[in-house]
Image (cartoon, rainbow, N blue to C red; front, side, top):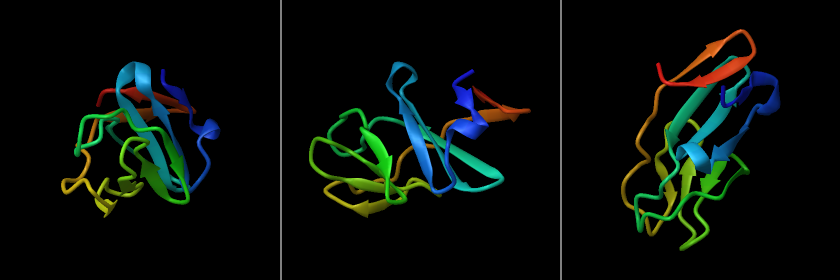
Length: 94
């Protein structure tokens, strides 16, 4: 289990560097997961804030809804990852 669903606020998310995954909660009933590695230079993503996922190395930002680039220098979206939600548990893998 990565986290409890109640641990992720709507519009936010969390980076799990030990699993190289970031899980977001764009809506009350939906979760998304992406590789936690920036597509620009391979840095581990740092945080989810203000509706975006932020890279600490060069400032790239990605949307929490689909991992698309909001601010470069990254040019490619984050790679989606599979998760399942069972009750209140968010589990890596689909």
